[in-house]
Image (cartoon, rainbow, N blue to C red):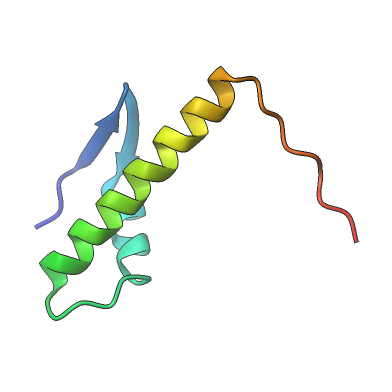
Length: 63
């Protein structure tokens, strides 16, 4: 069962985001896929927060 949300330094990650990310993590059972998804989303959020703290602003992608 998914939590309603998880928080990373006050930023909520919704159960809908976890469910969507779980699709990218093949596992032998849904719980393992959810754990992998939560881990990936937490790491992503921590990286985004650190980039913001360091004032790193990505250049726009152009073709």
